[in-house]
Image 1 (cartoon, rainbow, N blue to C red):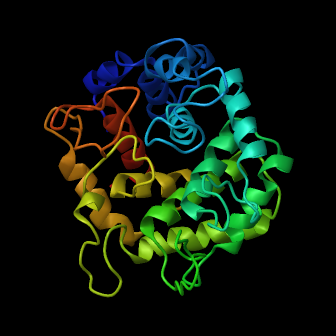
Image 2: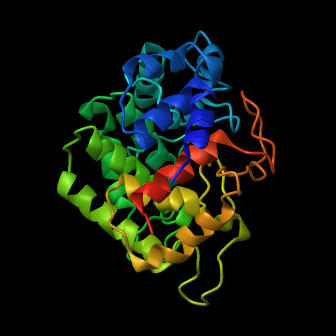
Length: 309
């Protein structure tokens, strides 16, 4: 558990970090502090980059990471007030102009099918920022149609001539987070099926012990063992564990290796250091690799509080 010194360090950081620490580590909801995210620090910087047409970057999905899609995802993750007008307007714009023939949000023209990874993330921030049931219903329908036979999700499943029988950790965590946000926001369209998909997605991650191949037992990717914030569309063990905690998944022995990895990464001073960020243009600078990261520290503490030793 974080020391009082670490908590003080988090509360002295960006207002969004302070809000997350207050909410997730101290158990205190502070609407005044949350409201300041729109006018201070990272939140204010992201909102200020929005163009007069309601988009960031060059529109819905380009470029990484300054598009509307990834900016709204980032704003959700730092806890921007769900009623914030600019974010809500941009979500509505995307939901009314970016859908493909299959009902999913799609930055590519037909006949390219929609992508489950993109739509999982989109369902998450759309639900956070109060999108109507009418606008997200087709996204829910699209995602449920993309479920793979092993219980998870894979963005390649609907590609022409693809015969996908195994899910992707990246896509599964994106969809699991989206389902969690939708259900938490009170969404009711096909709710029982979403709850079943949430459970099977969690089981998919757990069958892999959060990082290992079911076939070989080897670590799937070295990046899975490194910690990132924001993770964008990428999977790592911290994001995976955080997604399970948010979905209310109880402690499971198959989490043990990943939890031990998180604990080992804690520095002697109680903080977590940043790893190399994913390449791409950003509106705000990433934490420097090797230096203490308030963002990673608050998320890692949140995970370890959900799954204590």
